[in-house]
Image 1 (tube, rainbow, N blue to C red):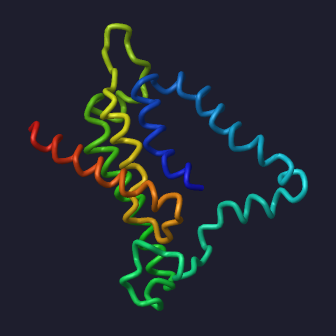
Image 2: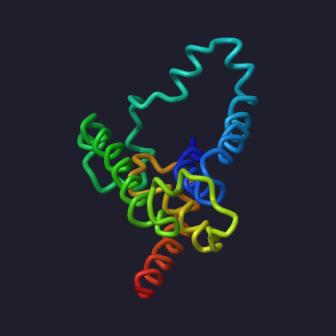
Length: 170
Protein backbone atom coordinates (compact mmCIF):
# COMPACT_ATOMS: atom_id res chain seq x y z
CA UNK A 1 0.00 0.00 0.00
CA UNK A 2 2.91 2.37 0.59
CA UNK A 3 3.74 2.36 -3.11
CA UNK A 4 0.17 3.33 -3.98
CA UNK A 5 0.77 6.67 -2.26
CA UNK A 6 3.09 7.54 -5.18
CA UNK A 7 0.42 6.65 -7.78
CA UNK A 8 -1.16 10.11 -8.26
CA UNK A 9 2.20 11.78 -8.84
CA UNK A 10 3.41 8.97 -11.10
CA UNK A 11 0.23 9.15 -13.17
CA UNK A 12 0.67 12.88 -13.65
CA UNK A 13 4.35 12.47 -14.61
CA UNK A 14 3.48 9.80 -17.17
CA UNK A 15 0.70 11.92 -18.66
CA UNK A 16 2.98 14.95 -18.80
CA UNK A 17 5.80 13.12 -20.56
CA UNK A 18 3.88 10.70 -22.77
CA UNK A 19 0.29 11.88 -23.19
CA UNK A 20 -2.82 9.81 -22.52
CA UNK A 21 -2.52 6.96 -25.05
CA UNK A 22 1.16 6.27 -24.43
CA UNK A 23 0.55 6.21 -20.68
CA UNK A 24 -1.92 3.31 -20.89
CA UNK A 25 0.67 0.57 -21.66
CA UNK A 26 2.80 1.81 -18.75
CA UNK A 27 -0.20 1.63 -16.43
CA UNK A 28 -0.79 -1.95 -17.58
CA UNK A 29 2.79 -2.77 -16.57
CA UNK A 30 2.21 -1.15 -13.16
CA UNK A 31 -0.98 -3.18 -12.73
CA UNK A 32 0.78 -6.41 -13.68
CA UNK A 33 3.47 -5.78 -11.07
CA UNK A 34 0.68 -5.61 -8.49
CA UNK A 35 -1.50 -8.43 -9.83
CA UNK A 36 1.07 -11.13 -10.62
CA UNK A 37 2.26 -11.59 -6.99
CA UNK A 38 -1.39 -11.58 -5.90
CA UNK A 39 -2.42 -14.45 -8.20
CA UNK A 40 -2.11 -17.23 -5.57
CA UNK A 41 -4.30 -15.23 -3.17
CA UNK A 42 -6.78 -14.28 -5.88
CA UNK A 43 -7.15 -17.93 -6.88
CA UNK A 44 -7.74 -19.01 -3.27
CA UNK A 45 -10.15 -16.30 -2.10
CA UNK A 46 -10.61 -13.48 -4.65
CA UNK A 47 -13.43 -11.66 -2.89
CA UNK A 48 -11.74 -11.75 0.51
CA UNK A 49 -8.41 -10.61 -0.94
CA UNK A 50 -9.89 -7.63 -2.80
CA UNK A 51 -12.14 -6.55 0.07
CA UNK A 52 -9.38 -6.74 2.70
CA UNK A 53 -6.70 -5.20 0.46
CA UNK A 54 -8.64 -2.02 -0.14
CA UNK A 55 -10.60 -1.75 3.09
CA UNK A 56 -10.93 2.02 3.54
CA UNK A 57 -13.05 1.45 6.62
CA UNK A 58 -10.25 -0.33 8.46
CA UNK A 59 -9.60 1.02 11.95
CA UNK A 60 -5.95 1.64 12.78
CA UNK A 61 -4.50 1.26 16.25
CA UNK A 62 -3.50 4.44 18.03
CA UNK A 63 -0.19 2.89 19.06
CA UNK A 64 0.90 2.76 15.39
CA UNK A 65 0.45 6.43 14.65
CA UNK A 66 3.39 8.80 14.47
CA UNK A 67 1.86 11.90 12.89
CA UNK A 68 -1.17 12.12 15.16
CA UNK A 69 0.25 11.05 18.51
CA UNK A 70 -0.57 14.46 20.00
CA UNK A 71 -4.33 13.82 19.63
CA UNK A 72 -6.38 12.02 22.25
CA UNK A 73 -6.93 8.37 21.34
CA UNK A 74 -10.72 8.81 21.21
CA UNK A 75 -10.40 11.52 18.55
CA UNK A 76 -7.88 9.52 16.52
CA UNK A 77 -10.18 6.47 16.49
CA UNK A 78 -13.21 8.54 15.50
CA UNK A 79 -14.58 7.56 12.04
CA UNK A 80 -15.23 11.20 11.17
CA UNK A 81 -11.59 12.05 11.83
CA UNK A 82 -10.46 9.20 9.57
CA UNK A 83 -12.83 10.30 6.80
CA UNK A 84 -11.66 13.89 7.24
CA UNK A 85 -8.05 12.78 6.71
CA UNK A 86 -9.01 10.83 3.60
CA UNK A 87 -11.00 13.79 2.26
CA UNK A 88 -8.16 16.20 3.03
CA UNK A 89 -5.75 13.91 1.18
CA UNK A 90 -7.97 13.87 -1.93
CA UNK A 91 -8.52 17.65 -1.80
CA UNK A 92 -4.77 18.29 -1.47
CA UNK A 93 -4.05 15.96 -4.40
CA UNK A 94 -6.54 17.86 -6.56
CA UNK A 95 -5.09 21.23 -5.50
CA UNK A 96 -1.52 20.07 -6.16
CA UNK A 97 -2.55 18.69 -9.55
CA UNK A 98 -4.26 21.87 -10.64
CA UNK A 99 -1.97 24.51 -9.15
CA UNK A 100 1.45 22.98 -8.56
CA UNK A 101 2.23 19.86 -10.56
CA UNK A 102 0.54 20.89 -13.80
CA UNK A 103 2.36 24.13 -14.48
CA UNK A 104 4.52 22.68 -17.29
CA UNK A 105 1.56 21.83 -19.50
CA UNK A 106 -0.70 24.65 -18.44
CA UNK A 107 -4.01 22.78 -18.38
CA UNK A 108 -5.40 19.35 -17.62
CA UNK A 109 -6.96 19.15 -21.08
CA UNK A 110 -3.58 19.71 -22.72
CA UNK A 111 -2.09 17.09 -20.42
CA UNK A 112 -4.37 14.39 -21.89
CA UNK A 113 -3.35 15.20 -25.48
CA UNK A 114 -0.46 13.50 -27.23
CA UNK A 115 2.67 15.68 -27.01
CA UNK A 116 3.64 17.25 -30.33
CA UNK A 117 7.08 16.43 -31.69
CA UNK A 118 8.06 20.09 -31.46
CA UNK A 119 6.59 20.57 -28.04
CA UNK A 120 9.11 20.27 -25.25
CA UNK A 121 7.46 18.82 -22.15
CA UNK A 122 10.62 17.47 -20.58
CA UNK A 123 10.53 17.53 -16.82
CA UNK A 124 13.59 18.28 -14.75
CA UNK A 125 14.84 15.89 -12.10
CA UNK A 126 13.51 18.28 -9.45
CA UNK A 127 10.06 18.27 -11.05
CA UNK A 128 9.97 14.48 -10.98
CA UNK A 129 11.23 14.06 -7.42
CA UNK A 130 9.08 16.90 -6.06
CA UNK A 131 5.94 15.47 -7.70
CA UNK A 132 6.56 11.97 -6.35
CA UNK A 133 7.50 13.12 -2.86
CA UNK A 134 4.66 15.60 -2.53
CA UNK A 135 2.11 13.05 -3.80
CA UNK A 136 2.61 11.11 -0.58
CA UNK A 137 1.31 14.03 1.51
CA UNK A 138 2.40 12.47 4.78
CA UNK A 139 0.36 14.88 6.84
CA UNK A 140 -2.76 12.94 5.80
CA UNK A 141 -1.46 9.49 6.63
CA UNK A 142 -3.17 8.39 9.82
CA UNK A 143 -0.71 5.61 10.57
CA UNK A 144 2.88 6.22 9.65
CA UNK A 145 4.44 2.78 9.32
CA UNK A 146 8.14 2.54 10.01
CA UNK A 147 8.99 2.29 6.30
CA UNK A 148 7.25 5.56 5.50
CA UNK A 149 8.43 7.13 8.73
CA UNK A 150 12.08 6.47 7.87
CA UNK A 151 11.65 8.10 4.46
CA UNK A 152 9.48 10.98 5.63
CA UNK A 153 12.41 12.99 6.95
CA UNK A 154 14.02 13.00 3.52
CA UNK A 155 10.71 13.62 1.73
CA UNK A 156 9.70 16.46 3.99
CA UNK A 157 13.05 18.27 3.81
CA UNK A 158 13.26 17.91 0.04
CA UNK A 159 9.67 19.02 -0.52
CA UNK A 160 10.10 22.07 1.72
CA UNK A 161 13.38 23.03 0.06
CA UNK A 162 11.86 22.64 -3.42
CA UNK A 163 8.83 24.64 -2.38
CA UNK A 164 10.99 27.46 -1.00
CA UNK A 165 13.23 27.52 -4.09
CA UNK A 166 10.19 27.35 -6.34
CA UNK A 167 8.53 30.21 -4.48
CA UNK A 168 11.69 32.32 -4.75
CA UNK A 169 11.73 31.91 -8.54
CA UNK A 170 8.45 33.81 -8.92
